[in-house]
Image: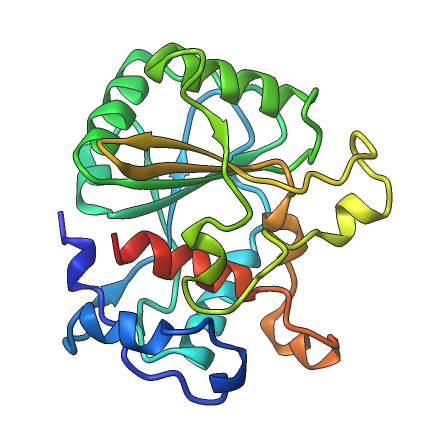
Length: 238
């Protein structure tokens, strides 16, 4: 598995005024070598894993636009039952429906996370009582313990990994317009393993929020994928 410390983020054209204090200096400590980032999506048997299909390209475009990270231009989809997961330092898992891992899926995910993998899981229902939320959280509890998944503070390093988010993880339009459980989840959750954030879990539905053609960013007052850039850089620098 490539190490995340091999992930270099050295130059930040066009975004200097928006960067978190010390972001560039921290990035330089990662090393000046550039190595590839591949957006890897996990395919699991139980639910609708193939959601927000334009999101990966949009986020990849943001990484290319704001950083000098060398990115694979297309997402890679791998089966959680496959040992290919052990070659991916970062993976994305999302859906609306049931999350009930098979035995090989559960074993692979556990070993992968314990050995340095970073999982970004996103609830497409943005509903803490929805099927994805209830069953994904149950799976995490089954693997890592009932109290392992906790809310992350708004001052967490995710919020300053590249762009500044002083008020914590940004809200999504999907939360604000009352869909799902009609709640604004002003937090994200995580599971820490050996002092390292290994699982980032969101009920904010970032995947659907960022699910649009990247060429349409010009119509936004503020590019809403910037927190995604933070997630990737945070994950790959730990």
